[in-house]
Length: 455
Image (tube, rainbow, N blue to C red; front, side, top):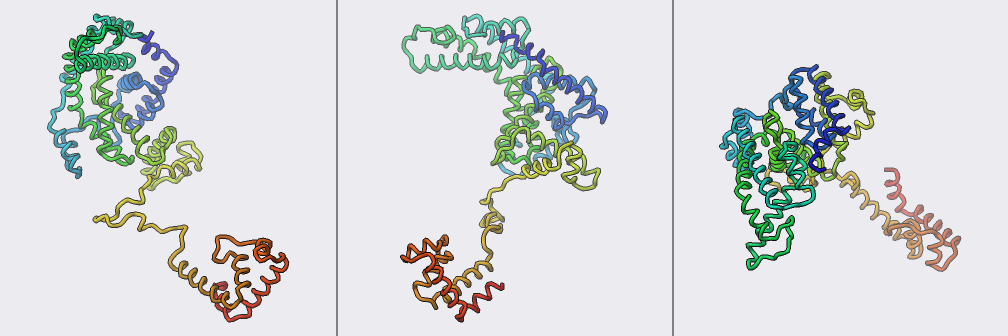
């Protein structure tokens, strides 16, 4: 049944494989020190789905090895007040500055406050589920899910239950909206989970207060963790997305984390939410930042390549070569070179240059396929010289040479084609061509043409 889906997933082969990989990852990290970098752990998580299972499992394994999660700079998940002030100083954009000013006025939640809001969300959800169960509202699998929640086999925030209840609540909200907007007698037919519109509307009104309390508690938790989103967004600035876009994507990840957060597991929301925020930003950077989208498997290799570069540079005292990176990652040097080439960002030719923006990038780039000014002058001079030389011939000879060598035309003509044009044989055209060329060589213009050939 659907209610047992999460337990069934936990028994599946892929999840056991993930646990083995996570344990090996933690042992290797412990051999190097007491910290685990989010960037390194994210590579492991990116290879699996069902974050609501893999993130808590990884956190438990990491904590069981006595390790602590840090970012690439060695900082823990939540920024300190000193870091928050530094963020405010380093931000020049007025909209971002306004947002950060407001965000900085929101108080951080204590662990006790965090648990209290999480309890309010769970209690509100349970009250909503019970009200729906008692009302007789029914859809396929709903009754079994509610039974599983009441028996404690599923939490109210379980992945298999949340999407279904979102659909139920949206259906009830729609029923009430239609009942209020249409007025008059309610239709008797049952269209909303076995309820007529009037009953569905009444059910929504009965759970509306609990919905409000749940959303209010979520909002408090979101606002208290917005600075965490900003701190993480700063580490994605070189991925090609604007800062505000990164914040927006991170906020969406934060909201998903709060929906999935289970305070009974013992870890802080900031620790759990960091994964969702990072994954939201990373996915957005992969999907949106580039004109040409890089495949996910290539993005994972690029992350490994960047990590390898960061580790090898201090050892070598310089940036590693493609061969050195390939040896470190056990990849062919040709594949490393290919990855390095696709990692370069694209830039619009219309990008403004300078403070006034009067020039564009295209104005400063040389056209590798076009003629240089000197080549253009030489081409014009050659054309004038050819015209002067041809003017010494009669009209028929000029036309034969122009057609034969494509002078003033897009392409040249064969002797047979020229013959048809003049009504002469191919051999006769060849003779006239040879005669015209001898005249040019004997004339004064031949010396000018010879200068171009020698150049």
